[in-house]
Amino acid sequence: MYHCTSGSEQNSLTEERDELKRINLDLEAIGKHLTEERDDLKRTVKDYVSEQNSLTEERDELKRINLDLEAIGKNLTEERDDLKRTVKDYVSEQNSLTEERDELKRINLDLEAIGKHLTEERDDLKRTVKDYVSEQNSLTEERDELKRINLDLEAIGKNLTEERDDLKRTVKDYVSEQNSLTEERDELKRINLDLEAIGKNLTEERDDLKRTVKDYVSEQNSLTEERDELKRINLDLEASSKNLTEERDELKRTVKDVSEQNSLTEERDELKRINLDLEASGKNLTEERDDLKRTVKDYVSEQNSLTEERDELKRINLDLEAIGKNLTEERDELKRAVKDYVSEQNSLTEERDNLKRINLDLEAKLKMTVSQQNSLTEERDKLKRINLDMVATNKNLSEERDDLGRTLRAGGWKYFSGSLYTISSINKNWQASRDDCLQKGADLVIVNSQEEQKYITSFGERVWIGLTDRATEGRWKWVDGTPLTTSYWYRGEPNGNSKLDEDCAQIFPANVGEGWLDYHCSYTTNRWICEKRLP
Image 1 (cartoon, one colour):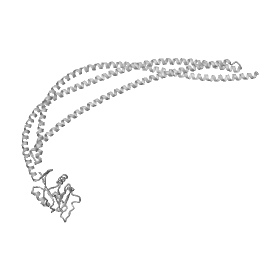
Image 2 (tube, rainbow, N blue to C red; image 1 turned 135 degrees about the horizontal axis):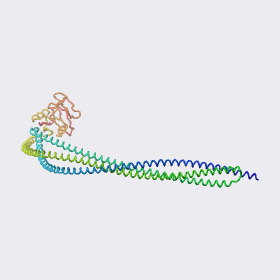
Image 3 (cartoon, one colour; image 1 turned 120 degrees about the horizontal axis):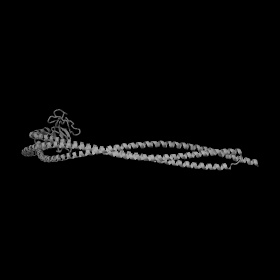
Image 4 (tube, rainbow, N blue to C red; image 1 turned 90 degrees about the horizontal axis):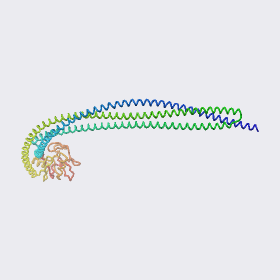
């Protein structure tokens, strides 16, 4: 009974010893983990110290930059005041030039009014001359239709050509002036494009500043997330410490229950001492961890303070940069204003000189215009005399035309495209028909074009025309001796029937087919058409 009980107790102590060994191993692992955590915290503290030094250097650098920006701002302010005084002087000088320019413009307007009045009077004379010339051209065309040649009217035509050339040169001058205005408009468009490019650059600079602000916000968010991560680490360490305390209490309760078996008891006591050492080591590590946490907390606090100071300096720096930028822009704006005033002053000076030259030119043109007016008046009187002569000539030509028309109508003649035509009322052979035409000072019709072909066929009769190959068979010639080049033969013609001696040409009317046929010259059932070419 005793041995059984002793064996049972020994097994219990063995199990307890094994349990204590496992606990010991766990405590060693926890101690190793705490040691690693301590080393990590030391490295973190080292990083915070390094970052603190960096922030301190950055703060000092920003202070130096602020001092430099304040000095630059002071210089820009003084430069701006100097430019304002310079602009004021230019404005005063510009006002003086503007008054002088306005006075010259008033004088110029008076001269332009006088020139305009003279120009209107000259234009009236030109229109009168143009009306006379138009009437003269009409009479010339009518006379040319009847006679074709008139040397006096050719001389007038030459004068009109010269006047037309003068007008062309005037139009060319207006075109040149229009091109100059177009170039000025293009220059203004280029200036507008430059202003748009400057606006675009300012917009890009504004966007860069917005991106810089966004980066600062992102950095602030990163610092906030790092702070939250440290808080979570602190909570984990507190939870681990609590677990260690509970394990220690459990070991104490376990060791208290063990009372038997000397070797196992000694071993148990040894394990207890080891456990106590581990607990002390764990406590020391915990205290050291807590000290490191406090140190980290202090560094975090100091870092936050430095970060806030750095951010404050950055804000001050940004404000100073903005002020410097505004002063620089104001200085540049004043420089541009001074440049514009100088340019405008030069422009006003040039405009004044141009107005003076224009006044001199207008005075010279005024004298020239008076001379031209006298010349135009003389030319108008001369044209009136010529017009009276032309009216008389026209009257004579009208009477001659009427007489000629009555003569032509009496002889049955009709006019078409520079020739007179008449168709016979009886039928004869080809040679007798030609003889009749020759007695009238004409000849059998010669067809030179498609239009004349259609005109001949419009008479509606089958007639002889002035075409024959009696001299050489197959070689057709017109009655004036010219060879046939353009023909309008009916299909299958000429067929050259030698038995009937088909050596003369006749033409079919429009209702038959508008073609030519070769036929025997003695055929006496055809009419004929005579043609008299006008000179």
